[in-house]
Amino acid sequence: MSDRLRALAETEHKWVSITLNTAFYADQHAAVGALERLVTDDDLTGAVRGVSLDVDFRRYCFRAAADLKLDVFGPHVPPYWDWEEELDFSFELEPEVERRIRDLAHDVGIVDDLPDDWTIEDLDPGPLTDLQRELMRSSDGEP
Image (cartoon, rainbow, N blue to C red; front, side, top):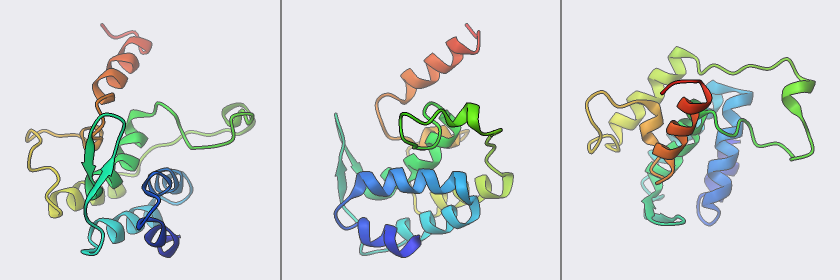
C-alpha cells in the first residue's frame, strides 16, 4: 500500500488522502507507516489545491488522521453499502498510533502554528473543521 500511495502522491492528492484514511480502518500501524513515508519524503513537497485554500502537501496528508477523530464520514465505502448495520463495527484510534501521529506531526513541523494543547483534529487544515466540530457537539447534545 505504501508504494502505491507514494506513486499516487505525485499527481492524485485526493486519492492519497482518501486511501490513507481508509487504510487506518484496516490496519492502523501500516497506515501510520505509510503516512510517515509520505510526509518525510523530501521529494513530495508543494501545495494541494483545496476548495478554498492551498494546503501544504504534508499538512494535507495529516487530514486522513484528523478525519478519524472527527468521525464525520467513517471509512470510504460505496454509498449503497450500509456497513454500520451489516458489520458490528466500532473504531478507536490506538493510543500508540495516536502518539506516533502526534510525534510525526511535531517532527515535520506542521504543528508549529497550532496551540500547545493541539489535538489530532487540529491537523485538518480545511475551513470546515470548526463547523464539523460544532455539528458533532450539537448531535451529541452538547451546547
